[in-house]
Image (cartoon, rainbow, N blue to C red; front, side, top):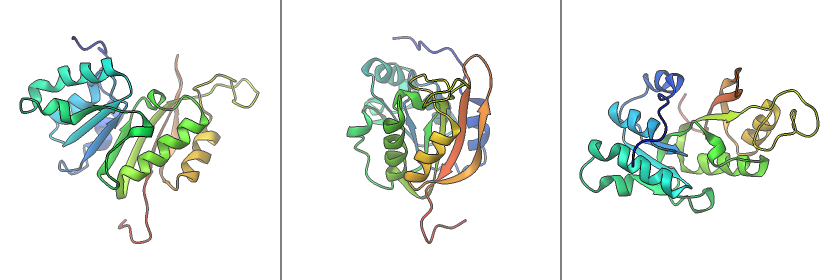
Length: 192
């Protein structure tokens, strides 16, 4: 199966992780066809990936198979919903959800994404998230469209999941506006 996503990996994500120790455990949450999983493996990071779509999981496995020992792609990439995300608590240094809409299509799912992201992060771990942004339009959501989020909704759900804002969310304009943010799991004794 060929990689159906020919877009390059997120330059912002790769620049963000350039300063991160290469032994940091990363979870690519919503890996799609593996463009970020592949890039992170090529940079030397130990990466695990998951997606709720079986075809996406197979595409990611096919994409990264040459970068791993034979058979390892099957254990590194899993098919999983947020309800059956079976990674142990406090496993990852980073959780990367570049297309978080894979798991979060409404406010309740967004809260679950943040809660599960926090659960699998080690204390002091980081959550990188990018979501479709609501446009000005009124009604409960600024544009009233399911699957698009205002900064206020994202902040409310982030706060409810007890994640600290590591950088102010960025609103990215364009044909498909997005909100991009980095959050951190902070515990009372988390080093700064």
